[in-house]
Image (cartoon, rainbow over all chains, first blue to last red; front, side):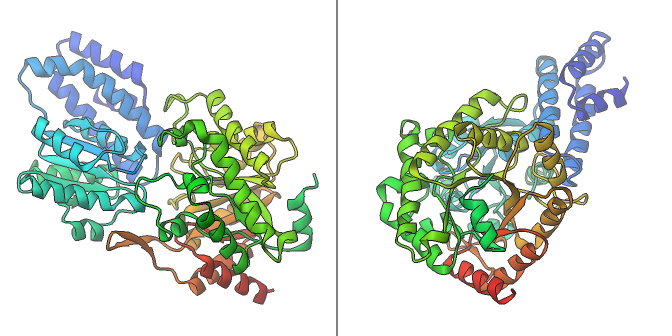
Amino acid sequence: MDEKRIKDSLINGQQEELSELVNSLLNEGESAKKILDVMIAGMQVVGDRFQKKEIFIPEVLLSARAMTSATGLLKPILAASGAKSLGKVVIGTVLGDLHDIGKNIVGMMLEGNGFEVVNLGRDVAPEKFIEATEATGAKIIGLSSLITTSMPQMKRTIELLKENGLKESVSVIIGGAPVTQEFADSIGADGYADEATGAVQKVKELLQIV
Amino acid sequence: MSSELTDLLEKKRLLIFDGAMGTMLQRAGLGIGECPELWNIEHADSVQRIHEDYLEAGADIIVTNTFGGSPKKLKMFGLESRTDEINRAGAQLAARARSASRNADTTLLFGSVGPTGELLEPLGTATPDALLEQFAVQIRALVEGGVDAIIVETMISPEEAILAARAAKSVLQSLPVIVNLTYEPTPRGPRTMMGTSPEHFVKMLADQNVSVDGVGTNCGTGADDMVSVVTALRGCTDTLIAAYANAGMPRMQDGVAVYDETPDVFAEKTAKLADAGARMVGGCCGTTPEHIRQLSKRLSDGG
């Protein structure tokens, strides 16, 4: 398997090329799990470059899109072979906040790293987070906020988790431009990251995935 | 082209923008999840009062409460059908505040146009034509309400910013337009979240033959991090430069955002933007009439 070619087409956001490559590898009998691992490593490069501000939103979105469609080719095979996702993560932008670019990037990075993501969209009420968490059995909730006026809804969501007796079994990570570690501590969030790669790392830590 | 803006620039070396609208609306009681622009109708007195406070503090330019006034943005509150009414009212409130001011003759009204929240193709689903129409609808209402110019603010997508500028000129060719992007510092200099540098944006405007009356930057950072943007713009264009920063970075306290930069520190830092070549300076998130008062004082003391 030409790992470099897979990584390069992923990093360059070449959706069709990557999918064709994956298809032909599968036809040659390559393991779906191995292909996925190479793509995950490629996505980590994308995340690192984004974190270092060497690349920006357009490049990340194009890579993530290429990753999503190529992963779609692998999913049926992985499911048939009994491979499990690393875990479910419910994400959403909190009530009163209509921004979702950053949250979607985090979602795609999580998927790219092998997690199953339930994306509730934007302007999501605390009750909706609770419902989705109970319905899916997710162990992680990711809350996003870009405007300071919506940040109190993060606190409200965590309080509602407590009221529903879920706080012990479910971890909450938060992020967004005005959000800080200090704020995360003050509202009892389990994790904070200032960009998408850090969010993936935080989820892994919380689920104790090495 | 002569306009109220160019006339005023002949009389004054520097023009001072007002400060934050959102911060002041929150203090006046704007709740979470409420549409700020609807206050132009339902709490018109509060909005007018904020404009008056900024004028009294020394602002030469007041910016309408219409940042999220595009049909797409209003649709998120179910208010798309009231786009005309909300934007026109925003302009009229600013005009009313100006009439009551003793400096009415030397005050300008800028109509605020912010991002639609949509991503253009191929990253998103919005088409250029659709966004052009969105902006034109909003800007037409602002012009009918009496604004002197349009300020396209807080844009991260240069393409969207250019569409807003083109929409303004399509509504009224003589309407002055200033276009501000939001930059963040990176190891290679300031870039928008889309990766655009100030120089590249100026080049895009020239390549696409879009004539604007000013370029600049607002929001995202404190004034410290904006000096490099103004310097970069100064190095590549002769057009007017606008710059207004946040009062530092926010921290949360008891569920509300607190911007810690005091008015005198803010004024000192913002004066450096003027030194770097910005002719229009003021305040963004977290700034108050007191910040503008100190800025006005600092700039007149400093010559």
